[in-house]
Each structure stands twice: as structure tokens, then as C-alpha cells.
Image (cartoon, rainbow, N blue to C red; front, side, top):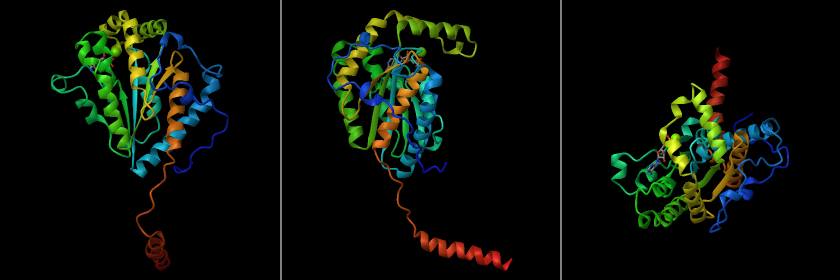
Length: 294
Ligand code: AMP
Ligand code: MG
């Protein structure tokens, strides 16, 4: 397939961007959202075709964004531990041109980071025009883990929703498209995944005590997520709640929302900066003559 050609949509597709989007200001009740949901797809095999098509489309769309060099995409991923952030990063980036994308993970702030305002490290990590950036955790940790573990007083974290909205508004006004995904798993599913990690020598390195400690605070986290999703889902930078107990469905939904959004941008390849006719005449005729002479 030529890179410029976008794969055609074959079947009618459920619009997940509408279905999973948090309407600005709407109250979110996570307990009412089924993390097992997998729409009309029976299983991974039934969804495979759509997932692959989305990945091909994403690849072509990212190529356009890079060529166009006019705007950027910022994808924020948030989830409880073992919620599937790493897997989603891998899936979303698969096939993208590494020259035009990057992943930024946010850990416990370093001493230098902690000595600044909470958005300092975040703003620096937003990619320039033409690029896709994926945040594995994000500035939302500053109203999630920070709130749950009382790392700053309520007076401080409660103001941050407004700061975040202003920050994101400034980014979107400057050509950064922001899409935020909360990967919603159940507490039971988390334990299943922790056990898998424990039994898989290739995944044991991911285990940390804090995962188990955070699990004890599950309800507090859900409350903190509900507030963040309600306060900070805006038209310009929406939040999506993705049912994520099924990894394949999560990949399907996230990739489809990204495709929907990027297709709507109607990105164009820039016009060539040279006169192609002249270039053809000048160099390609010369090449022919060179051939004749040999
Ligand atoms: P992981 O993503 O599993 O490698 O873990 C990163 C850890 O960093 C998690 O426990 C997060 O809660 C923590 N973290 C990320 N951002 C912040 C922050 N702003 N303040 C405190 N802890 C954070
Ligand atoms: Mg962890």
C-alpha cells in the first residue's frame, strides 16, 4: 500500500468516541460502567480485522501529521496499576514512524521536578508540531495519587482542576489535539493481572509493593478519578472511559477513537516546495540522455 493511501472502511463501525466520551461537567459514576463491556464483538478474533485496519489507518494518519507539520497529538493514558497503559502504548504506537512520535512516562517527581510547579515537567514533555506524544500517566497524577495519599493539602490539589483546564486550553489553542483515556478495569481483574505477573518471569520486574498498597485505596482512587473526569473533560480535550478488562477491546476502542479524531482533521500533504515539472525536465531528461550515451 502506498503510504499516502488511507485504507478504506469496510464495515459499519460503532462510534466509540461518542459512546465513551465524558460530557463536560457530567457526573461520572465508575461503578455503573461495566469494565467487561465488549460491544457487539464476541471475542478478539471477531474484532481482529477492525483492530488491524485501525492500526493501518493510524500509521497513515501519523505520516500525514508528520508531513503536514502543522499540529500535534497528545494522548494521555491513566489507569490503576496493571490497567493496561503499557499495552496500550505499544498498540497505539505500533507501526508509527519513530521519527514522529514519543512516549513520556511520569513517575514520582524527582527532587528537581518537585521543586517546581506541578505542570513544569509536563509542559516540557509535550511534543512539537507534526508529532504524536503519548503520556503514560500524566499531570492527572497530581489530582489522583497526590490526593489519595494526601501528599498536599486539599486546598492545593482542589485548585489544580482549573489549572489543568487552563493549561490544556492553551495547548489546544496552539494546535495540540488532546485525547485522554481512562482505562477502566475492575478490582478483580487487577488481582488476576497481578497474579499473572507473579507467575510470569518476564513480568515479575513490573511488580512493586506500592501496587498492592494502592489497591487498598481502590475506592478513594475511584472517587478521585470520578472528580478528575468530570472536572476536566472539555470539548477541546475530552476524557474517554474505556472498558478495559478485555485487552483486545481496549485496543479496539482506543485505536478507533484516535482514527475517528485524526480523520476528522482532514490533514493534507503540503504542496511541494519545488516546481515538479521543472525538476522532471531538468534532472530526469538529463538522466535519459546519460543512459543513451552509455
Ligand atoms: P509506574 O507507572 O507503575 O512505573 O509507577 C509510577 C509511580 O509514580 C506510580 O506509583 C505513580 O502514582 C507515581 N507518580 C506519578 N506521578 C506522580 C506525582 N505527580 N506525584 C506522586 N507520585 C507520582
Ligand atoms: Mg506500577
